[in-house]
Amino acid sequence: MEKLTIQEEEAMLYIWELGSCFVKEIVAKYPKPAPPYTTVASIVKNLERKQYIRAARVGNTYQYTPLIRESEYKRSFMSGFVRNYFENSYKEMVSFFAKEQKISANDLKDIIDMIEKGKE
Image (cartoon, rainbow, N blue to C red; front, top):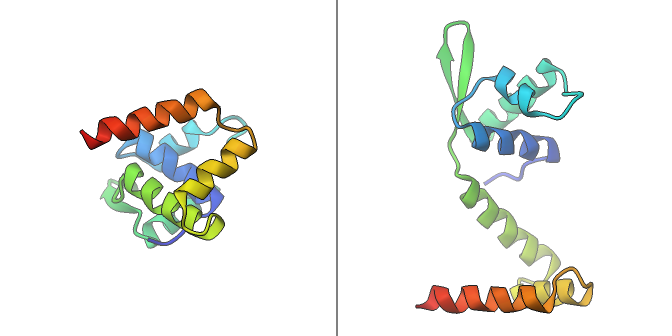
């Protein structure tokens, strides 16, 4: 799975939210001032080239549909993030956020509960 740029990832989040959609619908999702239609169309073309979305001709335009689920992308992205920044250790990642006070003891307890419930 090819890495997305920040702009591509933002557009992809809107596409996942919309499901099948047109460029004009993606543009409408951006906060004002939205990027120009042509800029979003170029980003969408890159997403198609990277095989994140599929284009289907509808009249004189294209409708785009996600080919990769958001959860699949997150899983892949997080695996690379942990590998590249935390020596492939989720324990190191959680420890980092705990030391930086970005995660509370209650949050950690909730995470432990979720892990234990997942084992059942």
